[in-house]
Image (cartoon, rainbow, N blue to C red; front, side, top):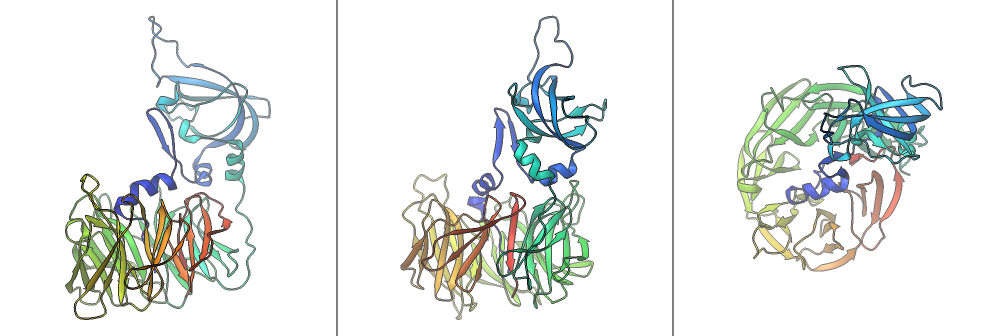
Length: 468
């Protein structure tokens, strides 16, 4: 089942770890996939910096700003894309004068890589600090995707942004079986019942193109269908963003999409059932996250998502389940037997008397839900809940650690290292996840060590799901 990344309190921190900020005073760049940058560029090269000068002389007073148009001259070393000349030729690149205005940051005699675009006003080459990289990263961005080297059936799929691909299928040894081609950044995916197809949520360029729902055949990795969803600018639910997804049949032609607006304390939300190319709202209300549970979902509704309700996916009817602790909560994890939910409760960090972060479970097996709470010794941590088994809830802590395993009374029965991954999927008692560095990690519970299994051909590997 697809899981969200880290919830409200961790979103900003996790985003910083996933997308490091390259900054120079007032300039901040969110680093994406270099393969995508290469694909979108009009030209790309590595060159040695020679000198820079203003494109136009300053005014008579000699004053100019950090944003003034500046010509940077390089000696061409390697041309990867475009028609820039022969090695040793000069390449002139226009940018702002200073890194404070996203101009290039270069040192005479040093080598750099740049993704270039044609400036529409006058046809010159332009770039900026956000399109500057190292020669090594440029070479990797320009290289073709590695050839598949796996064998046997698909065991896991990883979505993300891999240049010409948006999904990778893995075998039982975590080797590449094939690529799902496409230029979309896949940020949610779910393998369909039967394991023959998967559904993907992605945002095609250019903005504000609405998010799309893809259905993919996992035997060929070909796209079966693609549907634009009614979310975002000029769409039916223009202020909502789809954040959760579940495939409901073996063909992938029936899926449930949950969309919400995190910007409001009582976030507006909708559960949308998509069949083929059409969609119909099952439930509209307030909600910050959902946990799929067969024919129902557990919806974190109300102010900051503190009211746990159960929504029937067939009828849309809802009933109150429990009041969740904390100001807001992580997304919830359902135990393998479906009897309990686990979550992390975060306090109001503006309150000096704040309580520490707490781990909790909600027993939904009987008529009345029972909430058990366990406080951590520190109030500043983030992570995600999970289950080692139906009787062993787990707090996968990414910062500051360590992670913990509990029994059903929330007594700590085990500890392990920090688990710095975007999402966690369990295969038996082995946890799998994609890290903030774009690599695949695994951990054998209860007492194994975190192991890096492999790198992906992009630092922006995203959601992971296992084939049943």
